[in-house]
Length: 511
Image 1: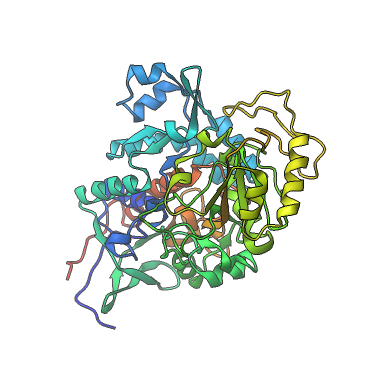
Image 2: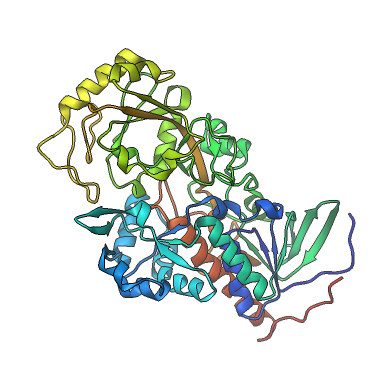
């Protein structure tokens, strides 16, 4: 093992996405000397954050709260927009409803109660935000109305968020090492002492009394997906970075950390069927196909198989990827008629899309590759006959325009499929992140098998278990990483000062 001198820091952050940078910035503002270890090379850095749309869910009481994090909002913009409110109670309701009451109540309390203050903290670090007019609001009678509790995104989306946080870290003297993979936590059986890392041509140790793990889930590892999520998951496409292969989880488990959470669960969406194995930074999140509430979803047998209008997209998209993966051939077709095509999100118009178009349903049936065309036509006829046409269509609310009498009814936004030209998009499963991970306490300390803190070890972001089960409310991943990243950084320094008698430990000279 090649080593050069001795390197020592107060805090090592393993990971390079939103959670990692929030942890690093939080520790630094408490006086820590911090190094961030990013496994990816600089041109692929940023973890899953880089691949997101940057949407962030948080509690807010109205437009005055939003102006606190978006002071650039103009009075003209406010005048034509109904931002509504998203209270802490609504956030709690959404978290417990979509996780089937499984979310850890103590961790969920921290997530929700600290969501708005964390957004203000990020704004103070130089992160800019903007309303998601194009995705989360429809214009009705001249006014935009936001729906589903998701109102704000980082300016520039996920790439913009990573860039802003990277600039904030560099400005504050936080060192970032790219193409540097943490391989092992240095642990003497009682306390953490640093990490062993591998960079091009070199393996060496970095010493620190505090290590914060923020290296994401295990979705990038086909073997781990199949072992924990089940057979067939090796066939899923990975929406984001190829570098999230469970390293942080495995290193912590190796020294006795307690596993926790929904190891057989994940965030998985409908994703273009012919997308590449891993995310493509040039395309970003545009392989997703999230306008399915206005569609009917058809499998290889020509049958509908889920309630496309069960709820707003925010509350169903993260679980429907799994349902598509379970269909014959692991695919489905989203079918739209001309009435709703103008409402399709921008991702339906990219060049890299698996799409067919036809003037008649009979012509469309012949173009849906892998689908029983005769059964498809029979299914559409039955569906159209079941639509409650007396109930008006309204995309801003759960409108109750449903079907009746079908084996699988559609609960809202049920428009007939009868007006050409018709468009259909083939989708498979794209996995975003996994829900199982490490057990932490309410201060972000990693717990061991006896549920006692491992001295000097902290965790945040997607590798923390217990927060999401089965499903998740859209936009809650980034705020989860930010809230617990900020908490982990603060706790690491508070513990360090406490263990050192009130002052940070002296640093050895860097080699």
